[in-house]
Amino acid sequence: MRPRRLKNEINVVPYIDVMLVLLVIFMVAAPMLQTGSVDLPTVEKSNIAPQDPLRIEVGASGELTIVDEAGARAVNKAELPGFLAVAQEKIPQPAVLVAGDKAASYESVLTVLDEIKKLGFDRVGLETARK
Image (cartoon, rainbow, N blue to C red; front, side):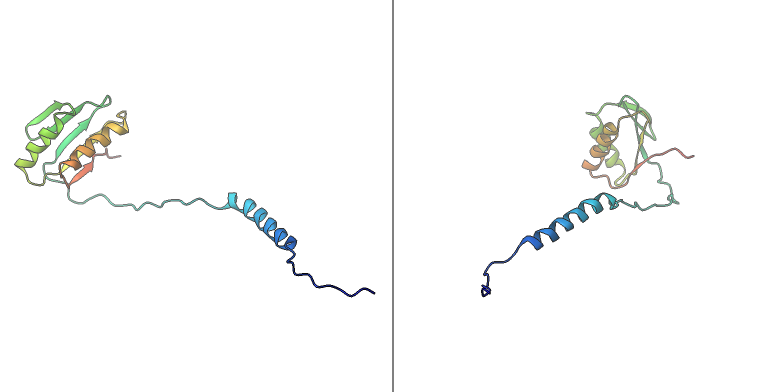
């Protein structure tokens, strides 16, 4: 009988088999995992409504109307910062409500909100209809 020789090599075939089994397990299990969902917090309606808010209405086609104690005025997007600056001079921290029409584009409402925030208004809200 021939004497056995020792090999100085590592047999990697079992490691490859284990890796392939793990790969198959992860490939099968990955679609079954739940995707992350965001559970948004809910808040109750504020008890105190703002006193005499400056109201900006965004119409269905993007036209803007400012409603305040002086009445309603139609303005364009270029005139909006001027009217807001005048309102801020009269009252240091006025409350501003943005009322967007259901048919108004999301972009036009966000543009108005962006202009309001750029001028430093802190009390800004979106107006909704009650059910």
